[in-house]
Amino acid sequence: MSDEKKQVTVELTAGEVEGIDQKASEQGVSTPDFLAYCVRAISFGISYAVSMLPKQGQSGTSEG
Image (cartoon, rainbow, N blue to C red; front, top):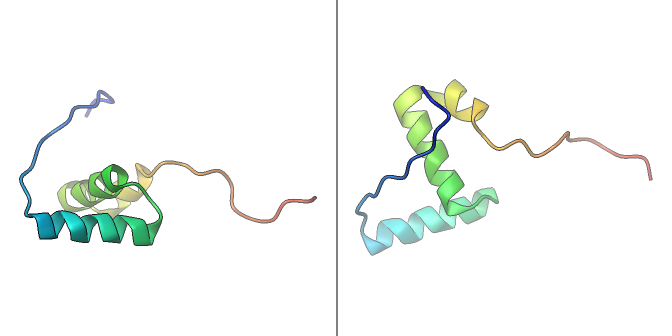
């Protein structure tokens, strides 16, 4: 697999799109990131999908 990114178009019902938007919002991610995760999970498995999630920095406490 290459790192080159391409876009694909899918047709969904308005209700499906609304549901996807809601699930993405519940997870605190953008709809495109949520959809990319779902496609990767279904196509290549959960471990691969998780490895492709955007890195958000190190979690934990900081000294202030």
